[in-house]
Picture 1: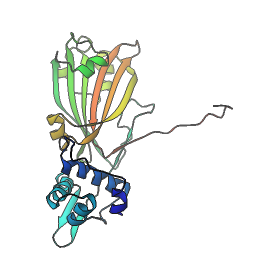
Picture 2: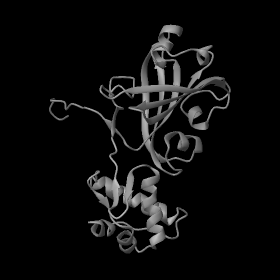
Picture 3: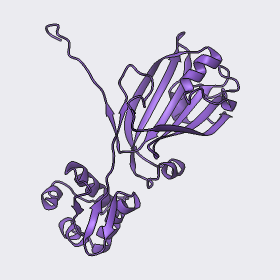
Picture 4: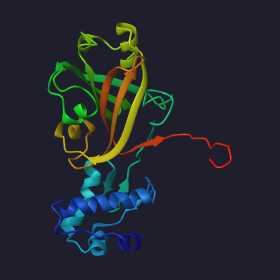
Length: 257
């Protein structure tokens, strides 16, 4: 099975990405495509080395990547077995303004605000989404977890002139938008969002999500507006790769659509 998969894959010794990390990424994709679970063993180091034409130490370091991410357990004399890895369904293209409305009991969602301050150091990608570079902004960093596992680091920037003192407030019911509506009379009615895949290069994000540097994650960006069309928030979130974004669409019955 691994040999057949490896025929369509190749490693690049000339790449600046270390060979063991290339191999780890290839093996991770193999595990995902084969739907490997706790009942399945990862191929041995010897077989991995033979199939991909690398040294045993390189194969060992690649497999150790799964252990470091707590996705694999090694049993002496038995081999390496996958640990269960739950996927989290999140809404992206839906009527709800919340990205986490899909989380339902018995799963438990918790939010922790770890940074709340006013800043003028506005990142370039935030300015590109419409927040003026020369105006102070309220910066909130929230950590969102499901059943105790951190799944998202959410960074929000809001015009400080619209929301004075927001950085010193407790969120009403843990909701930023509910707080904006209740405390400031600004109800968010629209949020333009996009999603991409990137590799983590920020060491703080890497540490918070507990993933190595260069691990792939989802990056969500969005700009939210109130009823008057005024920009209220710009958001950038990093979401672990175990998440899955779902949406339900309908088909028009009109001819030709």
